[in-house]
Image 1 (cartoon, rainbow, N blue to C red):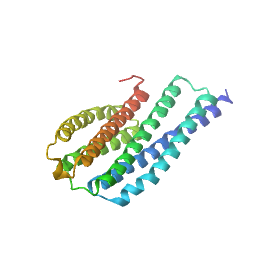
Image 2: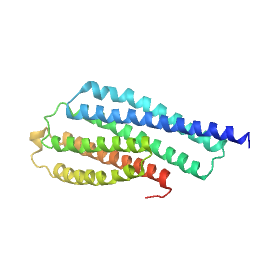
Image 3: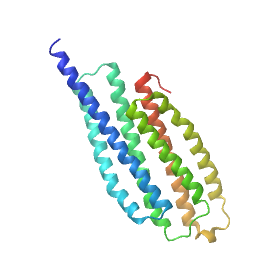
Image 4: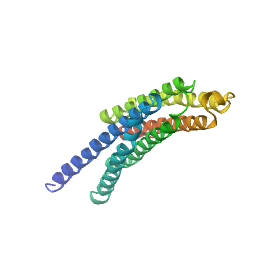
Length: 220
């Protein structure tokens, strides 16, 4: 018993460190979303360039956290509650990594859009992007506080993003006066952008659901 307790305490410290690293990675991902907004909506080339190096830091943390989780599973023989937390962390880290990738993709698309006139739908796309940023911030708040209710509330915001996607896709796909916006390429690029945003929202929703699963043990 005397040997078991120190080992348990060490395990709990390691688990808490993984949770802190996950939140640190999430903060980097949230900043990637800010950079993506600056690149797309403000035509900020520097922000688009920063996204590339920023994403490398996210990938490094992703690999470290995933390895730490695997080591906890293999070396520490966790009980069922710990297994639930570790498995959820491993899924969350993948969700966050994908959000970072999509933010980088938006930055790359933004650079290609720069030479063209500002599309009339850009204001609505910016609203969609801001909704997604809000969802990422919300899922990180849920993770930081282990707040199941906050995590599940994100789904309501995801419904609004889905509506944004459907409306914007219809508008872009059926645009007739393509010459006024510079041709077909900027339209295709914006369709890609709204798809990336829709996926960011889905992954933020997943993180919220996984927080709720850790807290309640119930899958939503």
